[in-house]
Length: 234
Image (cartoon, rainbow, N blue to C red; front, side, top):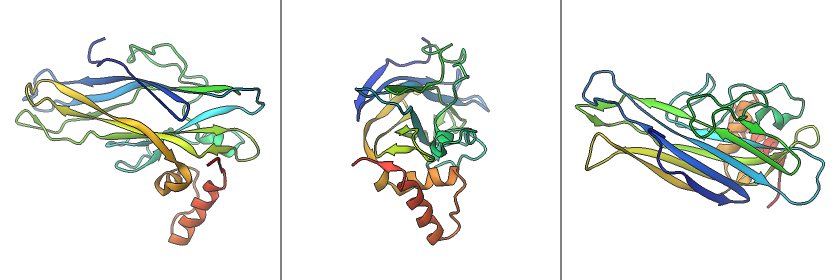
């Protein structure tokens, strides 16, 4: 698959991840207006044992270098979703993707597959983020490409839903190869455990997406407490 690096796999907190790194370098890095396109195609899956009645889904946060959606704040944590969903359960509005959209032809590994699946025992998402940077100076790339993600499992129970406290945080960056400046190396920040209750930036991102008041420090603390009240587990 052109522009793809070998697939990488990880497991953290029962989240299984397969990642297909992507980097498309310009044909002529000295040409005016050229750009580097970078990202990844990845699938994240969560499974639990036993019989359950409540549906599971995945929440994804993103820390991008560029503006993905209208509400996205570059260089900050954001809920990775174009807009609030129409569901009645509060956290269902924040789940990644929707049930109808299929992955497009730009993704060699996942073309034609659904972007997410919800279920009582298993849920997953597929994402194919791409960012573009034209930060070239005399053929040397000077841009910042560090992009991070955080994933949490959500159980759609009650009016608000419940967010599992233990999630995963990971990321990647792309750098110009020091030996061959026409090539770019894709570097991964392997996933590690993150706890939502202890991560104010993630609580703030969810609260902001839901439209909770954050105009004062007191309001921000109240919004964090509102989200933390939905969190379950150690």
